[in-house]
Image (cartoon, rainbow, N blue to C red; front, side, top):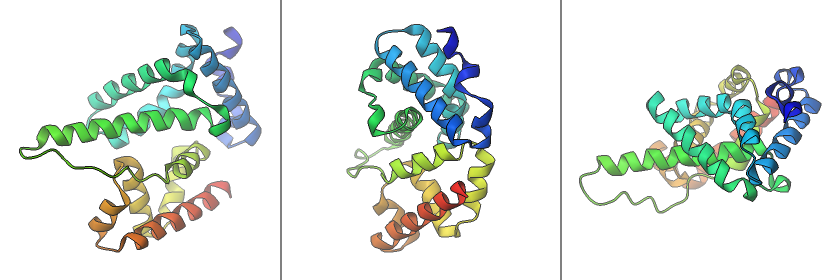
Length: 205
């Protein structure tokens, strides 16, 4: 496992957005997840060291307290340990898979807290969360440096930026977003779609 240490998982070019370096990282994480699927605890430790910082940063933006973020991060990695064999490299990058698991755990926590606060009937969240998320997750992965991602978000129109941030970090539905903004559902979908296109162009510039 020595050659798969953290220094190799995060080569210098990673911070500079170098495509070859990002490919190297994806390949290493893919290999580590295969080893995790076979029960390799050392590989699991390497995955944690290489990715926990970014996943924790995501959770602190989604959840109300650092205590919640700590707990959900552990829940996410427990799921990774149990479900590593379900990762399919051909369907997306390992980091996108890890972000998806972590984000879903955070949304579960937010929803359970809503239920706990309710005094009436259960919260009827029958729709799936906004799920242009494969595109959004890939954009976040492309924008490795957080300040660059936020810079690009700040270039969007206010309504697009607010909709994308709320959709990703709160996991609410298009319908709920449109009701909050008092606009038709189709308008909200259009704002998010155009915003993601603009965000992608900025990050890839």
